[in-house]
Length: 236
Ligand SMILES: Nc1ccn([C@@H]2O[C@H](COP(=O)(O)OP(=O)(O)OP(=O)(O)O)[C@@H](O)[C@H]2O)c(=O)n1
Ligand SMILES: C[C@](O)(CO)[C@H](O)COP(=O)(O)O
Image: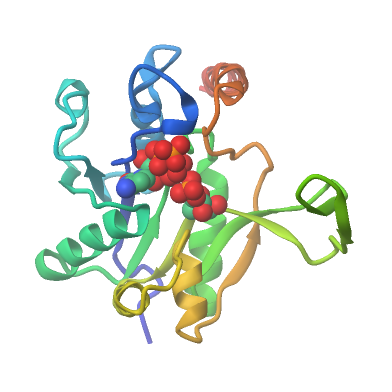
């Protein structure tokens, strides 16, 4: 039975180019207020579990990361061709170099996550001894089609997967390795666990834990980061 306070590490895939953002730099290095997207994201993880190991996967030609002011519990590994490859590189590093039970994978491009939601994910997964993901329930009517509607999809059981996604390190490493070797299309960690026949808990999160993807996401993120900063300062 894993100890309730089993060791935890974070993996942050941050090796993407951010093509859909159409910016002059990878989106994880866009400035939101006084910090970059990645610095905000790392701050949220450090606030959640102070001094937990944070493994950041960055691209080989990343000239921005060395300019950041980051704490000593942040370590980098090389990213890969796809997000899943970057995550697996980090998982393999963790497996070889550290004793970790649970790993939480969180997109660098999701700086708006709230530590309380991450803590809810951690406590639920550790209590139930089952991996899980933050997700938000679909609120709009969902249509399927390309240029015309083919069908309206019942939304009662539809969720939008977010991150962090939390699993036992050995379980996720094995599932992701096997899924990628089988050339399975993996867009999140849960997909690999599902493919391997594992269970994934859905833990409801806020809809504003968005992944910065296209230019219209920036204004939303700037507003929400400023709002969170104001609320944190008011609480102190
Ligand atoms: N080879 C890759 C691709 C993506 N990511 C990371 O995975 C997260 C989510 O991926 P996505 O939003 O798709 O980022 P990009 O791939 O950079 O975006 P785009 O598809 O628009 O290029 C991001 O933090 C991104 O940096 C990564 O570590 N390694
Ligand atoms: C992991 C993820 O953020 C969950 O919604 C999403 O799958 C990442 O997709 P992307 O195409 O790599 O941004």
